[in-house]
Length: 427
Image 1 (tube, rainbow, N blue to C red):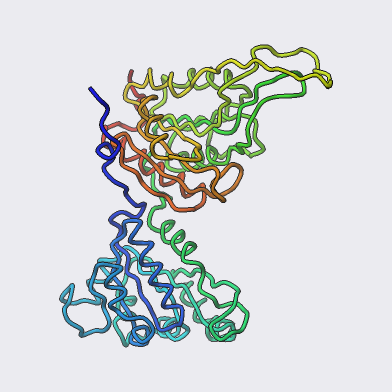
Image 2 (cartoon, rainbow, N blue to C red):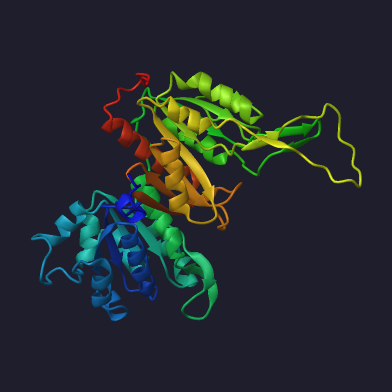
């Protein structure tokens, strides 16, 4: 039978904020126009966005613009019609998983800090039990005013969250701090708030093996074949899994990172050593997450002495290394297998092929040619593809955040399989 076409195989692209409920408060600062882009980006990531605008915000951006972008009626006052809810300010506050105020003016911050609720947005914030994030935007003189600083400090004491403004050219033409951060940075913060697994123990007792870092294939006593992998991705996956209650074994190639707390570290150098270490742990594990950048080939022979430089060409004959994921896929049983793929083109297609070929449950693929998403950095942008072909888009974010999102999916798969924590996966 012919393989299903790619269009039929994929259920569609799911955003990392799929189904999350965000209240977007827009107050009357000149940066209100940037909230339109923010709303659009949140919608593209799958969020349900309900916009509430102050009266002054409506003078800068029309509510119709936000309605078109959000797909929801825009709330512009306490008594406007039609209503989404009967007691709207209370129901808005209950509905939202997060209220993000972008931009947040000095006036709005001052009113909330003083307990004043004289319009829809401030009233909804007062009624909210969800997390509230303010993104201040104003002239630097206003932002540095001791009264504004005191109001921000007062709100932080009460658990309200802030994303600090940037330095740059302000609407008045001056240069200083007070500029609304880039919407990408605000999106990252919102994703962090709504998708973090921190504090959860949903992997309690689950046995997880993580591979990390590069491998080195010796040519002679002083030279080897390798790659630029830093091991950071695997180390944060291991650390996050341990924090969520898992028993974690981290099999790592040569890196310059301290061992994560609560994790058993197994150090290896070559691909064959990593293969042996993983296979020895496989029978007792529930989840294998292979982030390591393993050398596909090794020199057929290794010189016992340093190869001296000469003008003559040097030919190396390379032979394949064992494929750790393919072998794990053959022995899979009910285990969860997760792979990583570094690509430069056709990301989803290439990753999906690797997922099927190696019998994986999930694969994380990133474009290593993209700035901020390659080897060695602290950030990544990726797509998480599952066995049914669904794709979760993860915007540029920290590797720690990507690890949390990935482990969220692993926990969902374990739950769907009815896996009991601490019970080894059978063959």
